[in-house]
Amino acid sequence: MIYGTAWKEERTEALVQSALSSGFKAIDTANQRKHYHEAGVGAALKHAFDQGLDRDDLFIQTKFTSINGQDHRLPYEADAKPASQVQQSFERSLTHLGLSFIDAYVLHGPCTGQGLIDTDWEIWHAMEALLDAGHIGAIGISNVNIEQLNALYDGARIKPQYVQNRCYAQLGWDYSVLSFCLKNNIHYQGFSLLTANPMVLAQLGPLSQKHQKTPEQVIFRFSQQVGMIPLTGTSSLAHMALDLDLDFSLSDDEIQQIAQMGLGH
Ligand SMILES: NC(=O)c1ccc[n+]([C@@H]2O[C@H](COP(=O)([O-])OP(=O)(O)OC[C@H]3O[C@@H](n4cnc5c(N)ncnc54)[C@H](OP(=O)(O)O)[C@@H]3O)[C@@H](O)[C@H]2O)c1
Image (cartoon, helix red, strand yellow):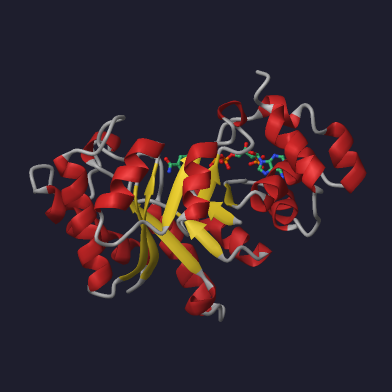
């Protein structure tokens, strides 16, 4: 389970501190001021390290966001080449986070909805160079469709180790991308598992009663059992505890049942 830090603005520091105190070990952010406050994550990390938390016990992930995903608060020069923008954005991420090493560095999304263009490759090669230099542990891509992932996997010198995608039950829980990831040892991170799937949550009453868990816990556990790493961005202390309390198993039949739930809609 990864704690996601989008849309928290000035509450980011306090919420990440709460998440770490609750037991989250993985944090997702981005150097994209429009949706994230990366420096707030860094302030929370500093506090946690001061309290004795060990850096090696945490998985910290941040993202490079191309100019089309940014507002005016750019983390790089607008007219720099894409490779140089990656370098600048990454250096600022290290400063924001107060770290010298990032566990996973993720391309927030390809530049266009179809295929990969030259700029995507320039960005990817710059991310490969950061990995070569030992500054990051792995690279990944987000908001990617199966054709783009196939193309990246085929053409990249260093293959993506993470994919982070929105997961709609109506689209078979992103089945084609998830199965590609499972076949190719790529860790699939699923977001919007709750917000994209209210019609599934509404059907989970009987299963959640049976397991004595909430419908939200059932969706998160389902996602883990089908091979995803779920993200939650909860702002509630009670939900943080519930989102980490997933020590139960759904049967194969129950997994099938949930897998089918969105498809009828
Ligand atoms: N790569 C991308 O483009 C991208 C896009 C979107 C998100 N993300 C990442 O994914 C993270 C998660 O985002 P998300 O889209 O999944 O939405 P989210 O921000 O996690 O929102 C989840 C919603 O579910 C609720 N919730 C969480 N746990 C719950 C529980 N146990 N019971 C009841 N309600 C619960 C939350 O409400 P409460 O606050 O009241 O608990 C919140 O309203 C983000 O912070 C970000 O890191 C990435």
